[in-house]
Length: 466
Image (cartoon, rainbow, N blue to C red; front, side, top):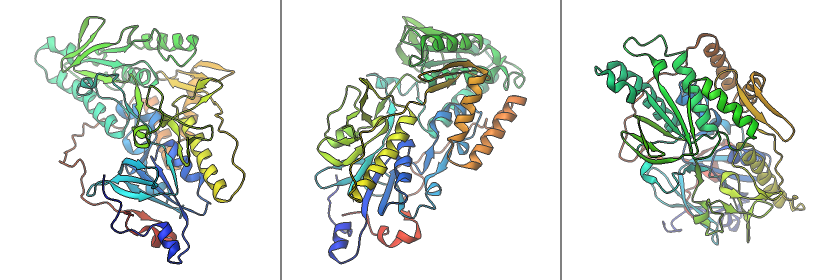
């Protein structure tokens, strides 16, 4: 951890010099929760610094469509700076938070050329999301990548397309089976959507494009230790989704988990499945925010928060989204986008109320708008407190809702046109195998700048060190 000295003029130092300074709100994470919090503060007299490891906001519900060639990365991601170009009180920093010092109100950020740079805050909103969870088997990660980022989606797309290319070039027909066996470990929404989308792709887009192999012979296997797919949905909808998967040719194997994964395949229920492509869709775990804060967490590592989403004993720190653990009506809130968005709006509004010395907001309460998952073309399942739907109508509702929540209008048009084109022709938008060159640092450039809107440029162009 770097020293907290060396240069920057903090907001408190600016006040001592007679310069009026706004309170600084640092938001960590530019997912659904972080964006919602920053937008909720757009009219507040605060200076917002939004920190994220990536330079883009990602619409995660459609990641599987990038992995299965329906959409390109640019159709579900949008530069964070572009999103906030008209919010003068917001600055964006690309870096990774490594620690939080609660008593001194500092977060430590590592950038491409500096390590553990201290950044002061008056209020802190942690919306750091989740990462892959291999349930104690980290050795699986090397052979079974997960799907959480655009880089993950492109890597999975490369693996799937390369498998077909290798099979086409392979002289020995006996090796085609291994190359064209795809195993998805985890039958939640991500696993179900990936397996179904791949099944549709091999029967439509790829069917007529290869000469030495039959793409429809691909063996797509969906494995889960649970006894039904989509366990968060009602048994009726789970059964409907499973039946749809089987009708698409997906081999669904339940009540058995992955016992071993290596470069040649996977072992399930004592049986080795030879497969060159295994994808992990089984689970996630929260970021290490609980360790940064030294806070009490649940068994999964989510930070236990007060009903107003603050860290116990620290009303200036808010923890939201997948990073937070909060019960409502005796049940933990689910780790879904709607929870993160509603909590982000709540946290932003709560900070503004404190700054304006208004009475505190009532405890956070999540309004459940329902859950949905798509299972190939023309079929989805939708569940709310009062309604359960499956089939084409649910699929149309799914499409409309996902279009509405894309970040920009031009993305909505682009995705809609691509969906219609793919539906009518079977042709997919992005089937390129792109091998990216890696650098030792993991970055392509060696500098990082924090840019802001012009009206707040003087305050924020100061160094970040305190």
